[in-house]
Every structure is written in C-alpha cells, then in structure tokens.
Length: 572
Image (cartoon, rainbow, N blue to C red; front, side, top):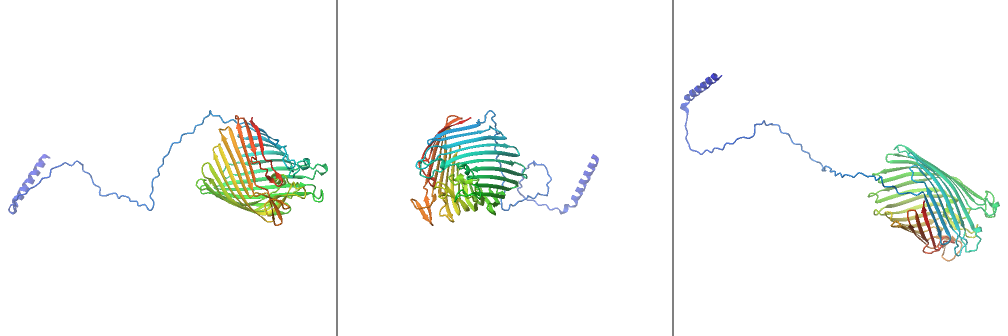
C-alpha cells in the first residue's frame, strides 16, 4: 500500500513539471505594492449541523368580536361542621295553665296539654273559659260566658299523615242593647252550642312523577237556646253541616298540576215547616248544597323567580234552585332583586256558603229566624307589591276591587224584637280596598306590625254598607326585655261606620228615604306586661280599653269602658 502511494505522488509531480515548462513562454509577471490585512484567526465552537430547508408556518388566530378570558376560581376551604353531643335540647313541658281575674268580675281559665317530642305522633287538648258577671252602666244585663274544649291527634309517617279533631263550645250572652238595668235577665238570655268533629288524610309520595292526594271529612252541629216553654222547644235555630273535601296534585318538571273538590251541605231549621208561632213568625227550613271543582296549573320559570297559577272554579249550588257558576283563578308574581321586591296580580271570585253559625260568629246578637243566602263574589281583582326594605323591615301594599252579590248586612230589628236584636238583609255592592302594612322584627326581642285599610262601598239598594268601616288602622307590638319582662300593645282604630235607623235624630243622615246613624270613631288600645319568674312560672297584667271609650261595636251595644285583668301562668 505504501509503495503504491509513492508511485502515485512521483507521477503527479513529473506531469506538473512538464506542463509548466510547456507554458513558460506565455507567462506575464506584474509587480506592485499593497497593504494586505490579515484577519485574526478564530476557532468555531459549534459543531456542524444539517440545516433543514422546511420551516414550520406559525398558526394565526383572529378573534371575531369577543375576547375570551380564562376563568379563575379562588376556592376557599370550608370548615367542617361540628356536632356538640353534650349540648342538650331545650326542655319542653307537656302542659300549660293560665288563670286570671278581671276588674269587672271577669274570670279567665285556660289549660293546654300536648305530648312530648315525637317524630310520628302528636296529641293533646285545649280548654278555655272566659266570662263576665259585672254590670254595665245604662244598659240591661250584659253578662256572658264562653267555654270551649278541643282535643286532637295526629300521626305523621314517611309516606302519609292523618289526624282527627273534636270540638265543643258553649256560649251564653244577653241581648242587653236597650237602656233598662233592671230588665229580667232570663227574658233576654241566649245560648249557643257547637259540637264538631273532623278527620283528614294526606299522602307524601316523594317520586317526581308520583301523584299525591288528600281527603277530609267534617261534621258540625249548631243550635241556640230552647224557649222557656217546653211546648215550644222546636222554635229555635238548629243547624247541621257536613263537608267532604279532597284533592290531588302531581309535579311534572317545572309545572304542578292540581285539582281540588269540595262537597258541602248545610241544613238550617227554625221551628216547624208549614206551622206558625204567631201572625209574623213561621217555620223555616233551608237546605243548601255546594259542589266545587278547582283544577289548576302552577308553573315556575326564570330560575323560579316567576310563579304563575292558572285555573278555574266550577261551582254548582242547590238551594232554592240549581245554578252553576264559573270563576277564573289566576295568580302571577315575580321576584326582583332576590325577593327584595315581589309584584303580584290576582284575579278570582267564588261562592261562599252562608250559615247561621257564620252569621253569629260576626254578630252574636241576631235573631234566630234569619234568611240564608250564599255570598256570590262574581269577580275580584288585586294588584300589589311586597318585599323587604332591610333584613328587619318588610312591607306589603295592594289595591283590590270586587263585585259581591248577596252580601249580608246586620240591621236593627223592630218587627220580632224591641230593637235589641239584629236581622240580616242582603244587597249587591262594589267594594274597593286599599291596604298597606309594615312589619319590623329584631331577632325575638322586638316585633311591630302596622296595617292600614281604606274601603269604598257602592251599594245598589242601600245608601251605606251598614256597620262596615271605611278606615281601619291596626297596630301590634311586642318587646322582650332580658327575657324577663314581655310588653305588648294592641291598638284598633276604626272610622266611618254607620247603622240603619228608622227615624231622624242626632248624628243621623237622611238620604233616599233612609236614615243612617253615625256610630262614632273606635279607639281601642290594650296594653299588657308579663313577668317571667322562671321557666315555669310567670305573672301577667293587662289593661284593656285604656282610652276608657264606651264605643258601640253594634248599634245600642256599648262596650266596657276600662278593664284590668291579672293572673299567673304555670308550665308542667
């Protein structure tokens, strides 16, 4: 190998020398002077690399209108809840008793008993007595007594609950509305007895597609006092009521489908039908049956801020004749600013069954032989707004309009009595109502409610809505001082009431051959205080009608001017 390399090198040198000699005649030599700079030498530190000729094209994104920002979540740790097993639940007492006496010989007694804590069962009873044996100036005997007893039981299970209740009330009074302090008390005495019972059943299906239903039944017997003569024992008012109610509802998505049905029968009887007690008093029987069906749909939207309930009320009445009624049912409300403001609108109507019991609940000084008509509210509309001004203050303001047919009014009777009882007349009226209320509550220490109402009446046959107020203001307040002294105040102000009279006189208005007597302004204020000696024993002192105003709740029926009642309570 080495020998071959040497031979190759000698051959190249010999060939180069011969080529140079052959060109020697054509060589031109040029000589000049110049400055030649030699750059300093440097060493390449990088290693040789293969350069790729293909370059990646960058991706360009042009947003259209919005700029997207990546969300940022700052998750704060929540401390786990702790359960103090050593802390005991507050002790509950099964019984509560209250006893007191008033300044006008007015005894008060009340007993309430309930079972202790139970997830499933609730039972107990409540008994109460209030009476007055004092005299009232310038009127006949005004003594009264009221005694009631109620017992109840209820069972609550996971899928259903049921309950039952029994009630008894005995109420005695006198028709004292005339100026004769020495009048015979027995001749003007009246007594009402009520016996009732009811039961109910309600299902609780938790499945979203399940149908829940309820059913209930109620019976009530009501009567007034028997005449003093045994032969006239039938000549008094007796009434029996039977009510059956039911309903079903199902939730489907955001909608709640429901339907309620009621069947009510009321039988009122005075005396003997077809017989007469005298020339102006005859037997009277009234059988009144109502059947109502009320289907409805309730829907929620806007994250449950909007609630709408739409339905109808189909009612069939069978009294003297059979009639059918159709009423719209609509309610819409919308929550603004997390329930700070809630505007709402209601449209409705209905047929209310009239009974002798419901009339005496409003005015206990009425005749026993009264005519009964169902109250027909053909249309009622309401618009309002409610909400909260702060975490302690709430309000509600609304205006309503209603057209009411066969509205019952109490007027002084001069045909069957000596002007110390009231009869019932009926009329059609339009009524407009404006109401505003304001509530304040600070924990359980202070609670204040104030309600103001204004009414405007327009009757077809009568010039005024007898005994109904045009202006009403109600104030209620409670203050808890160190959980030792509990102060409460109740104020009721009413104005614009008028009674129907039959002759001209002082404060009497005549219009369209009708005479209206102004009943004066009512200013009834009651103040009370309770002192809690310990968790079981307390004492109370109430001052009633502190303005000492003998206002007339009904025409010729004044109230006690001023009363004081004190007593004690005990838990056991």
